[in-house]
Image (cartoon, rainbow, N blue to C red):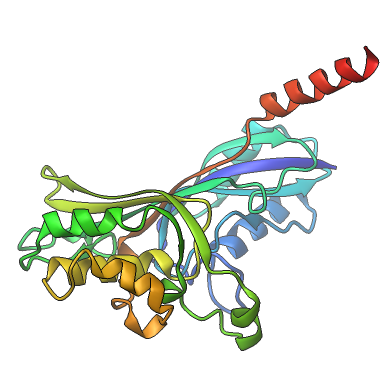
Length: 270
């Protein structure tokens, strides 16, 4: 049995999110169907991140197992020949049998785009959040930095849908990077966040809170109080999904693991 790793880009607008749901088009369902068609096996695609309906990806990662002898590059070509144009396999490679796209991910990077021009170009429809009103971008930059480090993100998390799961889950998260970037050429500001892992709707709730700071309804210093409150009703509104992009995922370097294994073997035989 072989394991194949896929790096995937997609336009989330036509789909009801990543995760398979009966009777509606999803990214995972579409990929699994195409993989089964290519291999003539029952294939299930495991994704690193269960993006919501309308959320896009530039570097989603997934894996699947197969008995097929088709090479990785041939798999990539076959997928792209059969997939709808809104989903592309950016890269395909064979990986070790223990690789898991979700459980081995060490960090994720998201980008949220806010278009600031007066008129939204039609080509950006369902690709950005359009807000042309006044925003204090300096205050938003300061507030964004407050999210860096380890914090309890209970205030910025949506319910999982299960009271038992909500009670048992940990809401502590580590954020390595959180900043606002202005792109004058595109007439937009982008929120960039990189962290170990994220709670449901967490990035979109952070963006909604940053927008309230930009509108003068909150101050950057209020972010610390929101962490301490651990009250989901206190965050800003959940920002719409269309501005959110899963940019990339990071994994351990397999060559580092191999080198470590070799060193251990040499020490044990010495």
